[in-house]
Each structure stands twice: as structure tokens, then as C-alpha cells.
Length: 254
Image (tube, rainbow, N blue to C red):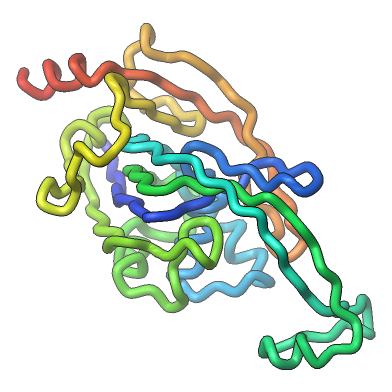
């Protein structure tokens, strides 16, 4: 038995950054670990340059997610401008948009950015050996964040309270089965694209609890935060399972 922290992630628009090449900025179908660590880091008030604190946080927690509704894809043709901030000793920080626009050199970039609309997920965290943080402190900060919380990009603000709960269970699968954060009064299920199966993703561990016949894939993901200021991410293995909703319902009835 171990403690798990579960919380829901719902946004009218979300974006889970994936490997980017050129002008196309894709999104994964479920939250990346780096996105969730970024969410928690903002809740604690960590700034991007606090690399050590963010790395310790990421190394302290294990991560799993259930896709309750993957949402509808949306692509935005995006135009952005930013001034030349210089390098080294000549580097400059702009504190307002007015300062940026008054700069004599402004670069314009074009990109196609992918989002998902009406997406709903349940995230599950647990502590690893030697963790430098507690699940209780994470849950408290998610309820009372220091900085604004958002899902992937600053334009993707949370649409409902995150609503975290700590639960003791034998495995990740049991934790997902035994606790429900999906308030039927808030979510009109007929408006979501919910299929006949539910997908689960988790990082390598010996307490996932999913049946062997449901294990589908082992994927190498590059979403372990290393340095947010340098956009550096490490690799980790992610496992997935696909469970029929009928099978889940029969297990709950028992």
C-alpha cells in the first residue's frame, strides 16, 4: 500500500508540448510529465531559472495519467513578435510589453500551434525513494498556488478547480478505480468524445497494477524537465494500457 495524489485536469483549451520541428508546434494527446511538473512548480512559486528546485521536484514524484476525454484537435496559425534580447553581458530583460515594442529591433515568427479543446484527464502522482517533497504539500499548493496555473501554454488557463485528493491504494490502477474526481453535475458526458475504451499512461514502476493483457506499448518520451530556461528535457520510458469501459464497470460492480 502507498499514498497517491490524484487530481483532475480540465481545460476548454489545453496544449501538451511535443517534439517540435520547424514552424509546427504539435501537442500530445495527454499531459506530458514536464507540463504537470510545470503546473506544480508554478503553484509553489518556482521561477524558470530555479533549475535545481524544479529538477528535484521532478525526480521526487512518479507520474501517471488517465485520459477521460481526449478533446477535439484545434490548430491556430500564430504570429508572434519579440525584441532582440541580446546575449551574455548584453542580455536585456523586458518587463512590459510596452518596453518590447519600443525596442528598435523586433523579430516576427510564424507558427502553427496545436491545441485540444474540452479535454479531461485524471493525474496520479506518488513519491519516489529519497523524495524531497510530500504529497500533502503538493496538494495544498495546487489549491493555493503562488503563480497563475495553466495547461501547457499561458493562454490555456484552468477551467475548473484542480481538486486534488490523497488516497492510499495497492497500485496505480487501484487508485484510479477507487477514487472519482469527475463530478457528474459539472461534466455533461454526452458533450465529450468518450469512446468504448479508456487509456492509461504511467512511468516505469513495479506497482502499476494493470493486467498484462492490457499492456500495449513502451514509449521513450523526452519530457523529463532539465532546464526550462534552455528548453532542455531528459528521456524517460512511458507505459500504456487500454481498458474497455465495460471491463472497468464490471470490476467496479464487483
